[in-house]
Image (cartoon, rainbow, N blue to C red; front, side, top):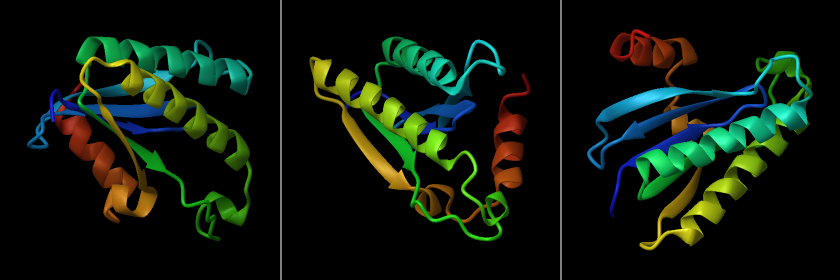
Length: 139
């Protein structure tokens, strides 16, 4: 596989991303956000899609991994309700479409894979994952 791996953790307000080598060494990480947090969801998602296109141009990944929701919302997540889940689903779908369109346009085909959230996180708590990235990237 040519190029680095770009992993994407979609959200309706912000999307986390990380670029890794093929050997899973972290090169860079960051967030895609809307222009303003008060913007309507469709504008925030459009801004994140633009940011994703910029990441593709900068890094030219050979593989794109996208966290994909299982669609299950338990009592411990989101207080058991589906508030925001529809917008979250729209964000995942929009970012996935941008990734697929980019992969198809590549000279050497890039691979886009969706990975269900439980496999993505390997059941490591979010706070621990955030701390690991913050330790590597202080800014």
